[in-house]
Image 1 (cartoon, rainbow, N blue to C red):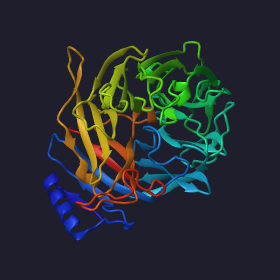
Image 2: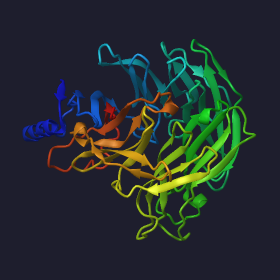
Image 3: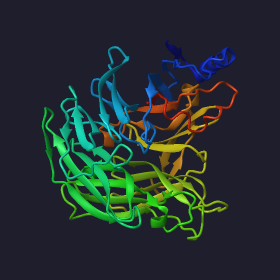
Image 4: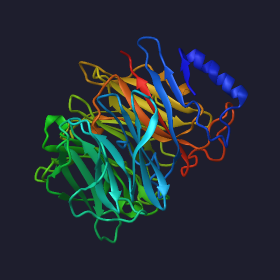
Length: 475
């Protein structure tokens, strides 16, 4: 099925007809529309593509298709090929599927599949244009490379081999020169969970044919656990450096709040910088210092990182969501961004007061070096997708948001779970005037004028639809 629309008003008319017909009600398993292609007036951002990939996206033990941060799960290649990786459950394990959209056919086909005991990511090598999938084959980190994706290459090192019910809190990033870095968190024996951890990482390069060459595995003891890393190999043009931002993820006693209603506290964001092949120059600083509350409180303020990014000028951005303590007015609830240099010196920070105070944010740069903030939220009647230009004052270097573009209608009637995963430079993506993304949607779809129902807000996490979309930015 194929739809083509020329303007927002025409699409709204289509939505009205859809509501009258009652399309997309509960129990309807056919994703519609299968494909949207659109054009828009010059100078406007718009959804150029919206395509269904699968209806069987699901995975157990919390490794859902919207779990974690902005993982590299989508790549765009030199010939226009798009690849998307998604997860489903198979015999208690994570079964990953790599889907390919060839430009000649513009249809989605399965290219490779495999099993894993933990999260799986997809990156593109900017030098060779090859695709690499990093998964846990029998709990061991393993890389699978195009064009065959077999056999896999074991990432060398002494890594923890955890069962499918436990997380390695791993991360992957790839630099402009093709250097891929893999990180895992190791918790050491301690009477206070998450208080004594190590960051273990390794970096290597693929020769574009069949061989990986790796640096020595590195281990750095960091104490309190920081995880959900956004990794930037080769930051600021230095191929021998690794910069990353990470989220504090502490058991309540380690965080100093034994009476917290939540067992794990996400409050604070750290930047660390180190050598790609050594830890001699390791440094770390707090981008967001944990907010404080009385130790006896049952409601702890949180600062949860939603995205991490380095722009073409080498500045590090972290966007995060703040939830104050119950009844507290400070810090204010909402979405924030902090900017720092690669050494961790904070240069700017703000709360985006005009962005709705739910959902999540992504930040990215386009081919004209313009910065953008993408906000998405799962409403009870609609999936909201707002795009804001980030405006930098050339003198003061203070940032503000420009006029919002509402892209929500392109996502009807699907109910987004979590946030979309974007094709980004740390996943090997060259910046351009389009941004490609994938997202998971609830198995339950919206019916015009009716609340989503008892599955709101999380939907059926064990049965998700998977979509691909492309936003075209102003030329």
